Image (cartoon, rainbow over all chains, first blue to last red; front, side):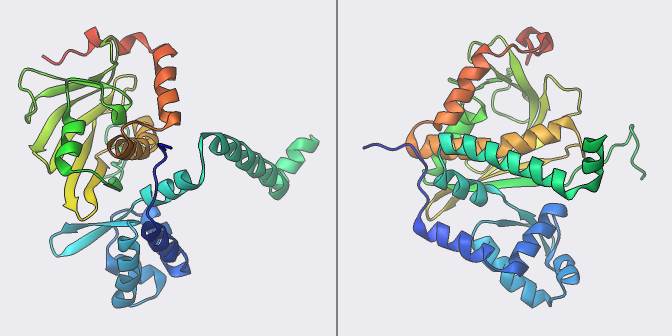
Length: 126
Length: 178
């Protein structure tokens, strides 16, 4: 049967999940999402690691395609690349499950934000 | 320089990268074609001014029937098989143009495709729209090059575009390229 779904190679999936499995690497991605174009030195100052320590994690994230480095003089500016995560999501879902998963997660977010926010509870009572 | 309405803050570049299992020549031909709608660019047909595919030429992304224009710009850089960069402005928005760059690089698995959005205004409608569209451009290009067609969801989106009314300001006669 001919399939039109994009297949991800097992090696690609392994690299992405391995990269995301470490809390420091997830923190680095968060930082790059907030401040695109940061350098290794910028990241090292925030996560309290040496430049070499950050570089080790950045290399793993680069191999997984989650970070793209652009040279600028002697420095490398780092950017978060969301595409591997997007492709993993597409790999495990189809059009039907994507629609209903989206509806369920919206519902969860709406209900939990109501229960977590005392202000919204007061608003509901009023 | 302080951020004001006259001097809005420019957002840092955002970047989207995928590896496509296809020859670099095929990927380049797909993103620069003018003879048919380009699926990854929301099924738009790229219309170029008299200068053709060269810096300084105006471009417009029009609906397949040519009646409506969604995006206009001017080519800034063309390095065959490597880089295609142009200004980018949504015709239904008043934001100033930003810059879109497509970079190609040959890798062991095929072609690495990178889409870079730069010079966009922080918090603008265009930037939000680009953030949503850029990932779709990348995955649709990958899908077209690897499987021969876009995903079902994207094909349904194309159908929706056909029936959804576009604002009058998007009519192609308002956006000439010559």
